[in-house]
Image (cartoon, rainbow over all chains, first blue to last red):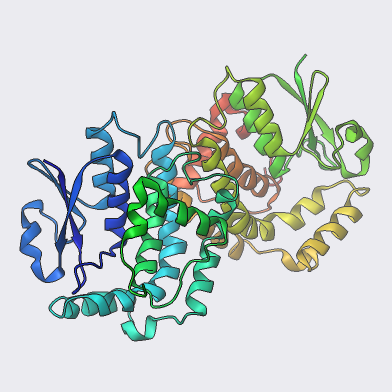
Length: 231
Length: 231
């Protein structure tokens, strides 16, 4: 039986945009594991109650429930060690931890003004009040006031991506010649912004833009086929 | 015959503080290679003329001259492949490139206000005019005006080190359980600031501070024995 990935869905279930779920989705693709997506909404927490988690991504692999994107990646690398590694020894884990820290310090602060309000708009009406309340408390601002326009949002994101551009000008992936979980940490955030935004987010003619397109093409073009709001 | 490392020396030749030379010095220690330091000054360019470079670090290994710290690290990993790796496959090079980009974007801008003027003061009088002119053109400011005090300098540096703290709270080295060139890229900058500064620069009670102390203790305590201005 294939792995079930509980993934945040919009009111229209074609829209699957959680940055953390994208990290897991890419990890499953990289490991070459069969999985099926189970659309999930904040208003339906009971569907994942057995996992002990209140939010997705959550996977069910046979009888095992695993929550939290980093923990899921570690689980997959341990339980499917014969598949392509997410954290290749000796420095894959430390490398991914550095990229994770940079995502928190540089990339999420630039992505939130692009994606947060747009993600809210896409949610089912029953989930919206929780999302608004929790996120407005987190950022201490109204969602509408955080939202960046088509000029300032992508410009700030491009600035945040500059350290990654330096690597990707020379290497095909953050992991070198092969993608690793370090790649998926960053890709998840960018895929989130790219799916929900009403305007183009990523300059495809930069090293990070070409890398983003490459990962959309990899794994049979899975990530590139997922619908975006502005398509 | 051991490798010769041409290294920037102060007027007092005990002070060897170039951040780029420290990267090479740590790389040589990591590879377990014998080397001797040849003190060099900006006012004595002819000593390294044969290398084709106008600045140190430069190494002479037998008949081979190699300049530029990154190129030297690549040379050492290729020519001494049986020694501990500086760029362990598969992702060591990409990892080091990311740390290099972060050093440029986050760490050097925080380290320059601590170290640049102090380094100038340590130079021999014949080297000082070139150093002042070239650095003031680079930063478009007088050296004295760039200089940060004991409160603002270390505080800004601590902020720049936060992404690294996240990794080093969990891993002994940026490379994981072993140091790699990624570690030496960052260490070189911090060692520069720590040697030349008249005030303590690094909070040793943080993850990055403990990592810094660890690298000073490693390799027989080589880095920890080098004199600092304030000792």
